[in-house]
Picture 1 (cartoon, rainbow, N blue to C red):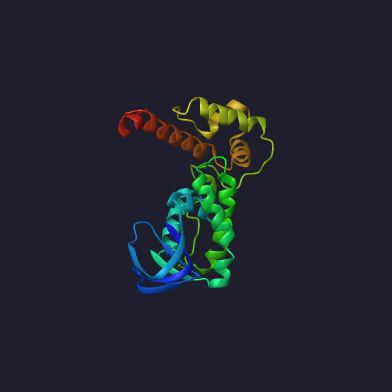
Picture 2 (cartoon, rainbow, N blue to C red):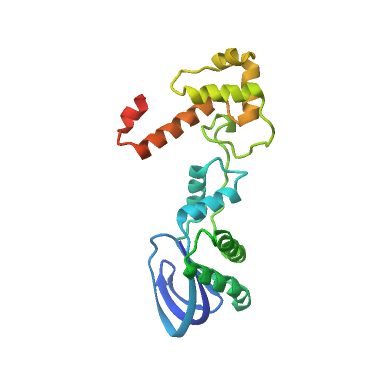
Length: 241
């Protein structure tokens, strides 16, 4: 996506929003693969920020972490919420002027070409700019609800307690990681760590936010993803182990 801030002058734009006049203080927001053309009226000064969609979705995920389970959930939420491919945001000259020092510094750091060293400062500038712009973005209201118990999702939980792990839970996780191809049951793990089946399930969920079987599914999924990236084996062969 692109965010273009008109800093001086004006232009006539033609795009998904029809034919529109933009002036200093306006912001043009374009989604991926959205066509837009324009003709300056005299001179015009603009600054454009190019934001990778994956990066934006990741920010949406952390913004709504209390409602979303994972990045795939965030992609669906993003697509359903930000449905307009092109928008013109009327910030006003005074508000847009407040962005000037952040925009200038962001441009300077981009030209400098040291993304690793300047990463945190550039991200801070990006957040400062979007904090001003975001309230003007039109969104579609949607209701979100979890369709499954969080403990059954085969992904790392979003809300993890930073507490020491019980020895039994740690040992059970080690057993699962050591032999992910085995047809483990909660009873098997309980026998290995000398707990009852109900205790095993409770202790494991308290430690990892997932049931043992969901945790095993996550390990297998991660292993399959690794093999798909690093080998030429077909998916059917990887699935068979």
